[in-house]
Length: 102
Image 1 (cartoon, one colour):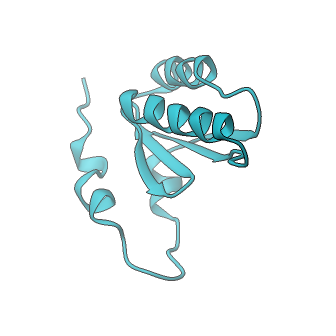
Image 2: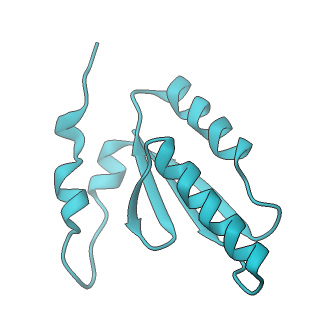
């Protein structure tokens, strides 16, 4: 499964920019990878792990803006069509072959 976090955060004031930078840093520290500028994803092994990371994202939410979280199966994620531009190098490195099934 993959968790997608999509966000649109205000960057008008210095404090807004700090909050947005802190949120992105918290996502990266939680193991999320940037797919596009405001879209990050993370591989998880099941719904329990997905809920754990949903709570982790919830704990680091900024005070304003929009943050959306979507949980997808690997089949749903792999059916995504890239309409313009290549796959990013980071996406090529992190794929479902890196999953460990126990």
